[in-house]
Amino acid sequence: MFIIYFFIAILLIFISVLLYIYNLAFYNPPSKRIKKHFRARGEQYDAVREKLDATTKTVSEAEFQPVEIIAQDGVKLRGKYYHYADGAPMDIIFHGYRSRANHDCGGGYLLARDLGHNVILPDQRAHGESGSNTITFGIKERYDCLEWIKFACTMQPDVKIVISGVSMGAATVLMASELDLPENVKGIIADCAFSSPIEIILMESEKMGIPKQLAKPFIKLSARLMGGFNVEEASAREAVKNAKVPILLVHGEDDKFVPCRMSYDIYENCTGDKKLITFEGAGHGLSFLVDAERYKKEINEFKNRVNNN
Image (cartoon, rainbow, N blue to C red):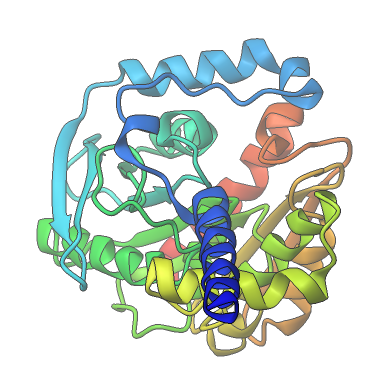
């Protein structure tokens, strides 16, 4: 009888560990994300707080049309459509991990508006008003990206599209680069992308003092059993080997969340039209706020080039 209780106790501990990892890394319930003001904190964000709050406020107050699609796995996805002009190019911009579109995509929205582009800001699955409670670090989100592209094409069949993202949103669009994208997609912009889901999660586990070798099997099993996905199924690094559209990679050199070396890794593995620009002194997702003039110049040049080809 003791042996039975012992194994039951071990099983309960094992399940508890998997649930802890799932809740820590992948679970994002509505109670933590809907109608809740998001404000990234830390020294690097505080240094540009006034600019960051101003861009967030601009997006939040802009007039939009609610839009909704159904993901390939049946999840309801919601977003906001900002109309500038009939027949204009379209920018679809994806926010980052446990963040908000109005917070992460303010710079991208402002640049798109200045160019006269229409914009879609989706709520990634398990974020904002979109369905699901499981964040998959781009694994399922890449297919959501494809569905948003298809949706944009139904609005305007001949529309020219640039997809972009910040942090996990950047990894999402890069992972989507190897999918069968419509010819409407002319380019991809990825700001501070991580090279693969498992690598960024393991990096965070090391910060918590948990060795990679110990953490990895539990992370993989938690994602599979609790989240219903394979965390090693795709990566930005591998996807760009098959990319068919031009890619612009952007990264802050002082990024303390996603190391700048990850964009270098992605760049080295990209076999197509590619460019990497880095910003000295810029933290995670803050390149636009640190050097807006250079950021605008590089982004606009890329968009104009790919949309005019």
